[in-house]
Image 1 (cartoon, helix red, strand yellow):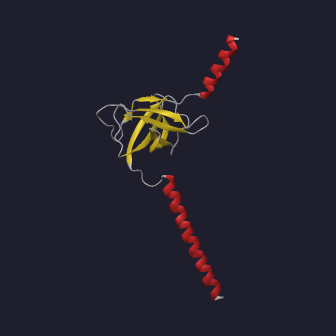
Image 2: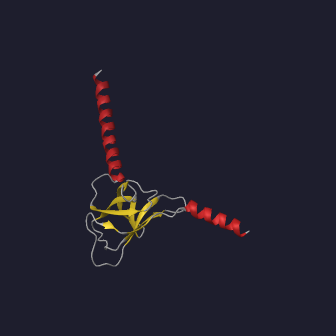
Image 3: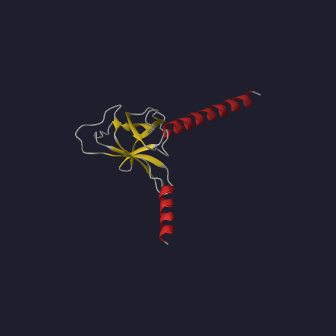
Length: 150
């Protein structure tokens, strides 16, 4: 009977070690460990596809993550709060737009740095923003404009 319990203990210990490594891997890859950057805000007329955890990119390279999205109760604009790597000093005239990873790809927040000498600081708001392109609307306009010309 003692041999069986020793084997069960060893197997249980092994399963526990594997579980710890698994959770550590998931925690590391998920980006849930502390964010090493500064918080910025941008307001959009529409922010379709942006949610907590969405990538923030500069020149196609991930430099941060969206923290939260909400609606401003006064202006009804979509408010997007996001972190950007602290090594990246973005100029004050940086612009933000909601971009897509292709025709059927996911959305991300794309930042285009400007040329201002002053840099954005923790809590600043990016003023120049562009919402996502509404593909359905564009296709509808194209289809219906073709029908009218025939």
